[in-house]
Image (tube, rainbow, N blue to C red):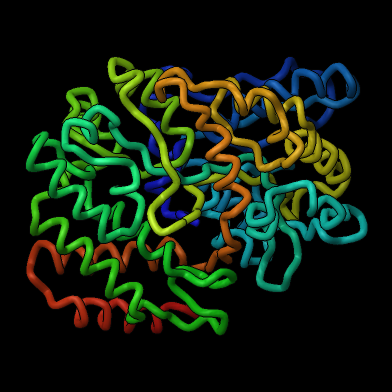
Amino acid sequence: MLDSSAFSRRHLLAAALASAAGGAASPVQARPGEPLTVAAFPLVDVIAQDVIKGWATRHPEVRARVISRQYDDHHTAMTTALSTSGHLPDVIALETSYLGRFSLGTGLEDLSAPAYGADRFKDRFVPFAFETGRNRDGRVVAMPTDIGPGSLFYRADLLAQAGLKEADLTASWDSYVQAGQQLKARTGAYLIGDVRLLKDIVLRAGTPAGENIFFDRQQRAQVTSPRFVRAFELAQKVRRLGLDARVEVWFNDWAEMLKRGRLATEISGGWMAGQMANWVAPGTAGKWRVAQLPENTFCAYGGTYYAIPRRSDPAKKALAWQLIQELTLDRQRQLDAFRSQDAFPALLAAQDDAFFDQPVPFLGGQPARLLWRDAARRIPVMPVHKQQKFADEVVNAELDNVLEYGKPIERALADAQALLVHRANR
């Protein structure tokens, strides 16, 4: 799973949403008594508030509210709250990129315990999403609500202009790069925004099911393995050929290149179609299509989970669990969130709806939701690690050393390995 925060839709939209939302989410109208609190971040807060509106009518005796912070602020605040047991909410929303840090500690309630029985819901979810919510001991500590099935977005008009077909992009990662050369030569468009995106997805393509990207089953760092070498070599080749625009996703220059047809492909979660259609590049409607990622690569870009802090108010844990079930197990609510917020449901029952068969106008009428559904059901389980974010930063820093300063790939990966070995068990 792509769990770097760079791939979180909520994280990347935080700045734009901050001004639109006008700050923290408004709570449901207060009633006497201690409130049931849900701590969330942008977009998730809107979905949670919609659920709480119905909750308030069914539980008039319980006051419930959503406390919303921007993405990074939220996760920092929750880290502090869990470590100090101060100002703990009753329910926490967690983005996948932070799940390892939280699930592998002792701060979250064991939802596999008899009082909750979360395991009985296992077969209702896309397998990888449910299993990602387990800690190292196999206990469920978080329930999934939405996921981001990865896919390859490409400009159909630019491919036609370059004399290429979709298969030229998807047959393999090598053919993807070769197609990029032809695209650049015949259209002037760059293949991708930044080679870091390519490096990340190639790493995940080669990760065996059941293993972490950076650490093996014995928690040993494995960043000198052949798949890391291949990922770095492909990234280096793309940079040397001038096929990446060297622009970061969600920055103004990236958006401008999308609008002007200067980027031929984008690798992202299915939710990207909605973001491009609604505000990034609406003028390109009809020119984009999506395909499964090269080499039958299946992975997720972001996702959301709900958890209960272990040291939160015991008197409210039963209610908190009821609310989590409404947030994650209600088919109609999952569909409503998908339609309104592009929150692709982790719940299998919500994926069996005529909405998935409908054409997506921005993608030229392609029934892309069917492709994303197929991808979601084929994403392998990839356990998170408590040093996941740190490992991602270390590897990215070494890739920069290779690309910018000519550091040999083998030495760069060896240095990353040494640092991760030092930190792995901390």
